[in-house]
Image 1 (spheres, helix red, strand yellow):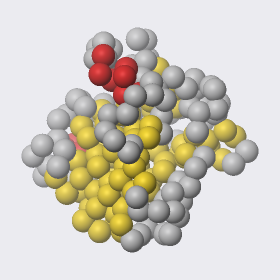
Image 2 (cartoon, helix red, strand yellow):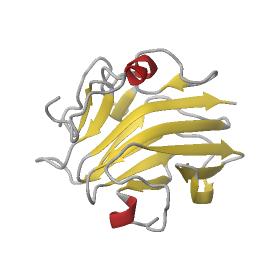
Image 3 (cartoon, one colour):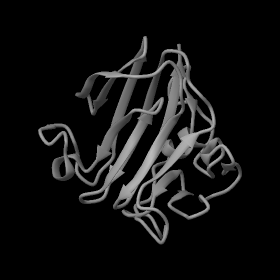
Image 4 (cartoon, one colour):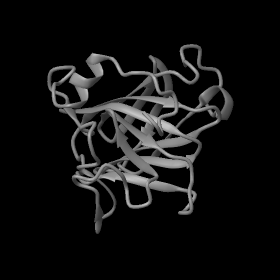
Length: 186
């Protein structure tokens, strides 16, 4: 598992969830665990069937979407779904942040900070956050407002959103890992 921050074997349940089986009724996977199909940097640079982005900042490996530390490319890099989401939906994903890692989850373009919260903030008071372990973010979008939690604790109670847009991830500082990225439209 070279390139993964933590190198531990992934449980069998993860394999089932990212390779097609739904964890919960009505959810669809936005990341297949094998490659970056359905994701892009821009409209002209799509990564269908590719295990890594053109600059290797984002790499699909063993069911995990790894956001690599900055290489020779731009410091900030954003990966977007090729699909737009104009309806109400619930987005769930798991993330693991290296010490002081900084990333973000974009919901129809506005950003929710996703990082090593206790070190990098802004949500330093979280009691359920597990440093350098898997944490779950749930984003519930209703009427262009997102309610966002991490392990059940509120990150943003009412994040204003535009009427439609993609989901995205940001590469900024340090290594981040994402898995089980799933969405249920309503």
